[in-house]
Image (tube, rainbow, N blue to C red; front, side):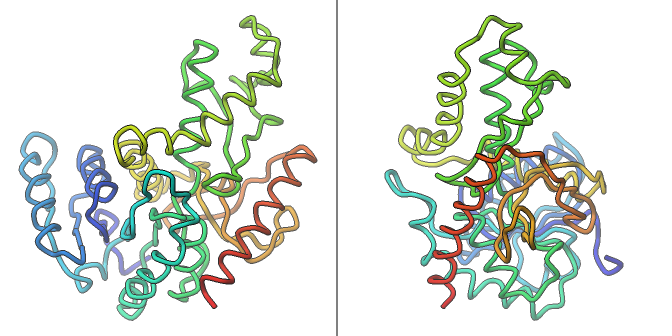
Length: 316
């Protein structure tokens, strides 16, 4: 990544998610320059101005509306552009609209020889990450999706609330599709090294099947509930984007459940799904193997089969 500025990011798409993400990134202080791009350039200018006016209250940085020519040296190119999920609509319902949009965006990035990491946030994120990988020709490690980073954060939050403990001491992942077939990995969930069911019993909870099903459903349906109540989700994903960008900018080699290409992992080939992955300056270094139960492995494989059908139809 010799030709990139590690202190520069580009945001393509300035809707709710894009602007909330830029706001969160500005607050984090990890970048000194962020360029905003949108099909509606005036919208990008407005968002850039609004966020830039708070820079004197935070840290010095340059935030501006630009064009694709301004992204060449960005270390991370974040794509939130796409049709928004409407009440009653699944993430997979968005496939054809957003693959079509990506067919205009990704070639613009590819032809400029960008060497930064492509971070896909638009939904359905796993399918669009795969589409971006194929359309860009970039190496797989440099094309990642926000995946289930937010779902995992929701999972840890709900477990922390349930057990009345600090959410940061909960170690658990949501894997697979960022969507209706996502999998809560109860088999390897723990609180500071103590298996989750053991810790639940320490806190007076013994009906594990009922409680795990309830929490997993709450995580899976969280976005639907928020969309129904306020029309869109954007603050949580903005914080998830900032967490991923921080791992890249600081070369943290953090383990995050981003969407990445699976090549034989758990018997799954040629599809992007969310798995705990080592994330650093060059994107994904490797997938971290979880000791999944047989039931979880079957669910993960079934999820991949369904996504394969959708992506084959969308890209054909």
